[in-house]
Image (cartoon, rainbow, N blue to C red):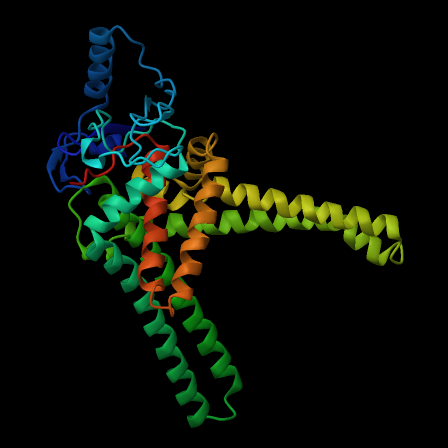
Length: 355
């Protein structure tokens, strides 16, 4: 049985086994010492809350996205928008009302592309050093490992020109190690950027604190890879039949191509829906299957918005490359940060306030 309770300081949802009741430990997010309540205490607190509010203890309903009217053109726009999507009127980001929803509590919410970009840009400018530090440090470490591995391969090749098997084993081992480090750092980047997006205390050291999620992240990637492989295999069967059993029959080839297109579309759709899964993992501390189902739920009404954010992200990267590649230093971290802010918006969580 699992005990679920919130940190009294940062409201992070914490989970632990029931045999840990009474144990005192630190909150992984804010470091506040907390005592794990007993299952009876948790049930009693939930019953008292339901009795006081007159509400059931079931899951909260999904709220409609709050709106307001633009003071310039009068159109209805997202309540937290910093710019009107119709007339372009700038609205004060600093005047954003603070959310009463505790950090870490999820309420699936429909998002707007312009609202996410505005929020991300405002926080990005205020926390430029941290955001750049997280993303560039990750890529710098990955580049250093790749460069170092090439040197090692060169030394082995020069020292033992005929040691083919040793070189192959070394290459495979080094590639596996680099992939593991890359996954580890990606989790750290998600942890750090999520804290920056929510205005929580953050430091570059958070980049190296993703160890508790590492195995689950590997499981998520393997499961997703298996699902993609299965979809493409099934969708490729008509093409295999057309090219082998029907000697390139035109009708069979058309059916095979259409089947592959359907499979590709299914993979693309699933990738969009599951794109924020690492953020969900580090935010909710869930298992592999729970991460998939939870991520699928929060993106259910946001597919078009996620596509729009993806297009804007590609345009940002293109602009960075066109700016003599120097712009990539800023475009790449901003694209990463947009994903963190989008996750906060989709889950109804508050983002940092900016002056």
